[in-house]
Length: 384
Image (cartoon, rainbow, N blue to C red; front, side):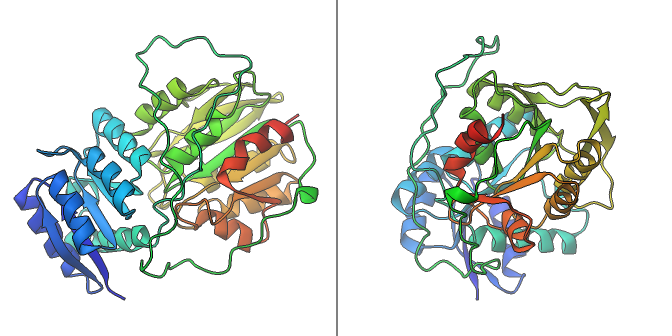
């Protein structure tokens, strides 16, 4: 099945280059181009593409405003193109919150070294995004718990915006490449008993920035366990993402550094482009940051971090796999389960892309399968 794409960018060179690459892929067809966000919104309604690619800085209407309008009028998977800078990361995170599914660097040299690899990556990403649930959002804005408010942060805080209302998958979208029957959510009676975990580890990819935001905003500042986060994200994006989460949440959130000590009420985000492992030193968790290994597809990699926790804190870790493409996290969860730990996975309906949690569920590794809205409250109930 051919995937139809609308390209929105104010650079005529970029529009032409991207169109040439996508049309040459065989099963992707660019059905229209737009030079600003307003034109993109109008063409999205008229042409009904399967995917919209979107620049963020354009005349007449910027990319973030255009994404919001598209999600209001006709929810369509949007792939953002952005610069790999702190400011580019901040704007991209705003676009993801507005409803965009995923992002790629606008500088093609930062995606791949040769044209064939570039075409493969763009093709795969477009097809994956086309099979996503662009409206897989919680039905109401997350609210902060009323207890144990964290002291105000010194950096300027971004205003907290409400999330878009949940939207049904768009009719007529291409069949998803990962679409086996969804494992049934486990009934309340099958819930794992509350435990005193040494670490809560959360791994995610596509759709993860907003999913993590929703989960962590539900936790009070005095949450009882340390948290480690692994989000597939470039090195230039993770500092901005950690800063954003820290401003929105009552718990403290920051990018992990070598030697950091795990402690309750603190969430440490694995730095992009590297690998994060957790060591047990006298019963206390400490962070090891290692160079990214070219043999591994993901930097950071959920399997690496979860595997280290299976060894360092056997039977004392809660692993959670949220939305994302691929199967990263499955083997790490397998090691955790073999060591006696507990694993939760997000359900299909609330996942933007049901890849990583599906891999865990299909392997029989998930003790609980939860909608995103329930993960935060289950953490409050399940971590003693």
